[in-house]
Every structure is written in structure tokens, then in C-alpha cells.
Length: 381
Image (cartoon, rainbow, N blue to C red; front, side, top):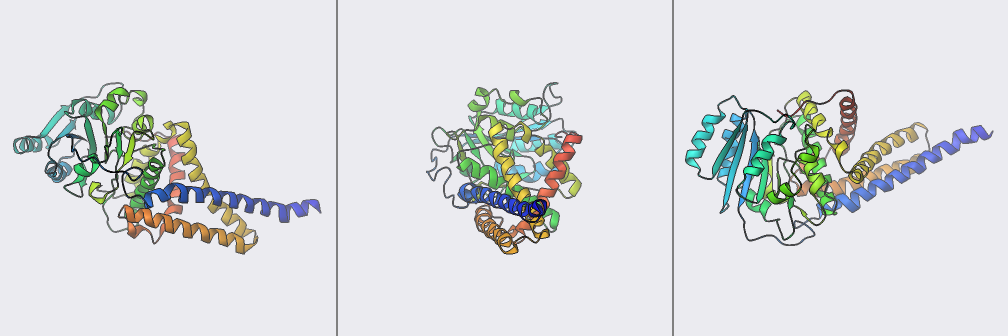
């Protein structure tokens, strides 16, 4: 009789209690952290902007990116900003990039290039050419982007540097992907904006933990003071997120989410290409600070656990009304908070199928994390 009572009442009640705790944890993330981005008006804590317009060095690393550079470099070189340079590190390219550079150097006096044929043995991937570019930069404010990225405005440099208030050494920007037809494009864009909601919101909450190299700026002196990428030079990726994870603090980090500050890039066109890229990015997260791994892990745990417990309780036919009520409250909160964030980041079209994208990404990310354990992802090329 006791065993029967345990099986029919105790277990479902325990699972429902766990569902309630996971629901509360999720609400903390939604309303206390992510909601900061939705209501964000300024750059950090709502304070002003830097109007001094100091000189800026834009640094780009490129490998066999002739077509992307031909299309995007003029948009960067013709930015509406009084004093800046554009420095491209040509990393072992064997296409027609050098001919493009010769033409651009004649046309734009503020355009400079560095050619690198070989890596140092102890550096992996992008870190060696990027470190060369940063060390060769003429100015203290370094603004990073990629060869396949294009600014959405002539005021990109202006907007990004304006967040460098006194004591600010790091500015986190947003780099969306182009809108195209198909489910894969929407999934890639949702994954990108979901990551952005997290790292931008955490930074606004005083817990900066990463940035993306497509749109990232920091002080050159900070790079030297922290010995650049030395602390993680053996790790293939992480030139952006691992560096920011090691140097960003509540007091020295700002965010920039004005639409004129965005740079857009072309998304992957095949699922296999995107998964390869994602696996490389996911491989760096295990090197984050322990506190950041806990915070990020709890968020992922809350999402997986909620859906799992919801399905289990439905299968047990346990008090359907309260179980469904928690799901409805979660969905309403998710739509309200994420709608504000997606509007802030100009990604409103992704709102409709929000839960579907979330569930699909949870499954894919879980599979990719397992794959990373079994086999290391490929390096940056």
C-alpha cells in the first residue's frame, strides 16, 4: 500500500515541485537579466556617450576572402568619422586579395595591410594574425570585425566608439546575419540573437562574459596589459569570447545596441557548415570562468528540465491544469521579454515561432556538445 501511494502520488508531486522550481529559475533569467536588454536605452546603466571622437583602428583578419573584402571594405573605408584607419591582416591568402589591396591602398590613404605567410607554432587559428593586427594598430581604440561583415550604417565607427566613457575599456556590439528564405536561416539568426540577448544582458547586469569578433571593440592598452591571447593560446578558437571572458569587468565594459552600430554578415547556407561553425564556438565555453559556466549552465538546465518535466507530467496525467498553467506563464513571459529584446535588435520576425526555435536549438546544441567530446572541431581557416 505504501509502495502504491509512493508510485501514484509522491513521484508526480515531487516532479511537479521540481517543475515549479525550474519555472522560478527561468523567471529569474527572463525578468531580472534578459529584460535589461529589452528596456535598455543607453549604453551602460543609461548614462551618456563619448562625444570626443578619438581616433579608431579597425582591424580585420582575412584568408582567401577576396569577394567579401571587395564588397565590404569600401563600406568600412568610407565611414563618416573624422580620424580612423582600416588595417587588414592578409593571412596566407592565395587568391586575388593582394591585387584588391593594391588598388584600395592607392585610393584610400587610411587603408593599410599586413601580409602573413606562416603561423607561429604555438598559436592556433585566428589568434596569431589578429594579435599582429592589434599590435600594429596605430590607435588605442581597436574595433574588430570580419571580412564577411558589412556595416549597416556609415555611423558604425561613430556609434561603437561613443560608448567609450571614462574607465570603459571594452565595448560589446551586435553582429546579426542577413535575412534569407528557409528554416536554416531563421534558426541561425535565432541562435545568434539568443546568444546576443545573453551576453548583452549579462553585461548590462554587471556580469560581462563574452563578445563576438564580428563587432567588438576594446583598448589596445588593455590587450597589452592582459598579455593578449597568451592565457589561452593553445585553444583553437576564443580570440573573441575567451579574451573578453578574461578581461571584461563590471566597471570596464559597456554595450552598444543602436541599429547604426550593427554589422551584418552572410550566414552559412548548409546545415553541415553551420554545425561545424557552432561546434567550434561551443568548444570554447568550457574554458570560461567557473562562475560564468554556472550561470550559463543553469539557464540551459532550466530550459531542458522544464520541457522534460512538462512532458513527463503530462504523460502521468498529473493535475493537468497547474502543469499547463506553468507552461502558459512561461510562454507569456518568454514572448513578452524576448519580444522587447528582438525589437531592440531588429529581429522581430523571429518572434512567432519562438518556442519551436528554442526546442530545436536545445536538441542541436546537446548533440553538438556530445560530438565535441567525441571529436575535436576543426580550426579556423
